[in-house]
Amino acid sequence: MCQGVLVPQHQITDEQFHDATLIWKYHRLGHQPRPCSAAIRLGSHDLGVATAAADLYRAGLYPVVVFSGGNSPTTRARFPRGEAVHYREHALGLGVPDEAILVEPKAANTGQNITPSRKLLTEASVAVDFLLLISKPYMERRSCATCRKLWPEVDVVCASGPLELDDYINSIGDEELVVDMLFGDLQRVIEYPKLGFAVEQDVPGDVHDAYERLLRAGFDSSLIGT
Image (cartoon, rainbow, N blue to C red; front, side):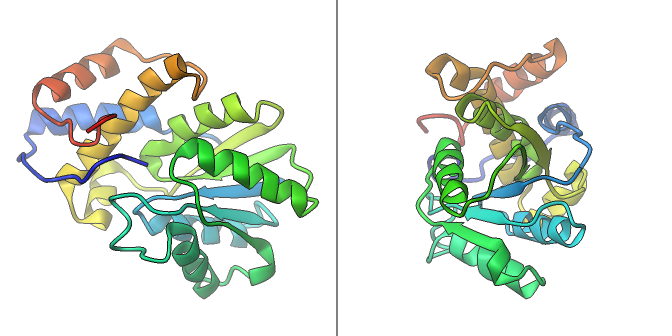
């Protein structure tokens, strides 16, 4: 989850949108969905993640899901009772049965999504060898890298809503918010391994160049420490 409150300041140029698209495609891992022992749905401002979780449950890809997430500055107003609680209610409305849902209501970052959820699954006697991580599209790479650091014993499959960047922006309704946040996630992919939060990921040269251009342009409201 990002830190700080995002305040729109830019009109996105065609060149900046091209850079954002490069970063968007880098974040998405293209994993082939397959049946898993359990799923973790990572908290965020995007209710579409809960919709994706429900779709994947109905497709028979997992028997039990942990909805994980408390609040952050970007979600407190929208989900006052916590991300996991609101996401659970949304999934119930889409046909996921209550007995298939566990709730972790306190996580404030991705590491806290993973470790307490692992504990909940253990307490529920769910043996996990293949784990499905369900997140925002631009969070796939970072969530996978975090899980591989904190839970290396499992094979991780990542999934998100099947949207291109244009469609995702339309679903959120705020172009700059999306660009700021996918840019902030790239910074975390680069920096978090140095802090011991995630395994290191290779960043191609064109993606790193796009990162530098957006940084110089001032798309920095979701960066670490802002």
